[in-house]
Image 1: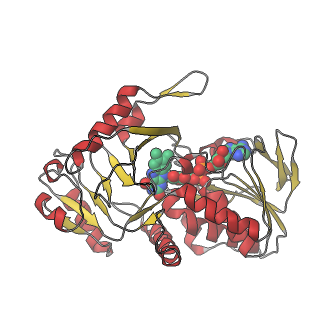
Image 2: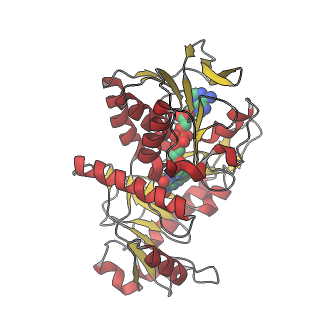
Image 3: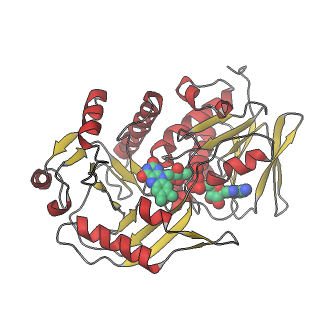
Length: 373
Ligand SMILES: Cc1cc2nc3c(=O)[nH]c(=O)nc-3n(C[C@H](O)[C@H](O)[C@H](O)COP(=O)(O)OP(=O)(O)OC[C@H]3O[C@@H](n4cnc5c(N)ncnc54)[C@H](O)[C@@H]3O)c2cc1C
């Protein structure tokens, strides 16, 4: 446990959900905070996320607990914005393939044992619980409906949080060029950027998504990295009754604030080509395949058309669990690097801001320290 101290100036690097959420929580605590981002806000994973708010299936007890608290923070936010089109709790519906990989019975028993709200439904029972799903697509093992799950449109949330940050006196620097953390004598002292900005700080939070492992390596620190390149496809608006987030063997689907759908899947992610110059190529057949898979699981099999797609890193630590807190060997150098950053966005920002401001570690983050690598 670090010694309590007071921090007067913090620089947060990264304008995704972790950086923005941490920055606004620091501002709420009265800490002078600068948020620096290389381009516009929400241009990384937060701008192309499925953003399903959940703790479905199996994981460590500590990670489950943190996700549940993360969802609770969204419930509180939802009570403040009851009519928000960008934050919905209409449940999640999951089914698996009809083969040996099907875990529906096992997952249902696990979720019930944890008290995670779950209903095991046969295909024909789904319509009475959640609308718009093609019963014919559901496998014989049935589906799990989790009524407490939801989704958030992260760019909308980021816009709201950043407005509060600025209102509270926080300084926002977008299009700042590529930032690097300066470390002197084992302590983070600030941030410089390729556009010539230089900012001194008592503490720095690195929240640069998939870039975190590479950036801490510049300071001889190691965080195991399992970040894949992911694809998110957005359809044109389409008038459908579907409300739940769907997780199905070939496609995951969630509604969007403008009445369209966001789609992703594991197989389409694997088809993204990483070019030798570091850019990405997505085949038209991959996008069409995802649109077709989505149509198959929606009642009436509507024709879905492409609006846009996003491709790039999906931050995932090497062991799958979140990485939050101060680096072992560098005082004042904090990191936020995790999968499920939508679900964890509010709670991670709150807990990290508290740790940075006070120097006191929060017990909820004890299992997720960068020092474990
Ligand atoms: C396809 C997909 C599906 C997902 N599905 C879900 C889901 O269903 N549920 C869920 O909870 N989570 C989901 N996630 C994960 C979630 O979206 C991410 O964990 C979260 O958005 C990460 O936020 P971040 O702030 O860490 O990073 P980012 O949003 O990537 O933000 C990092 C920012 O840092 C900036 N940056 C990077 N390097 C530098 C630098 N050197 N200097 C200055 N700025 C820099 C980038 O431009 C970017 O703006 C999904 C992600 C993807 C991609």
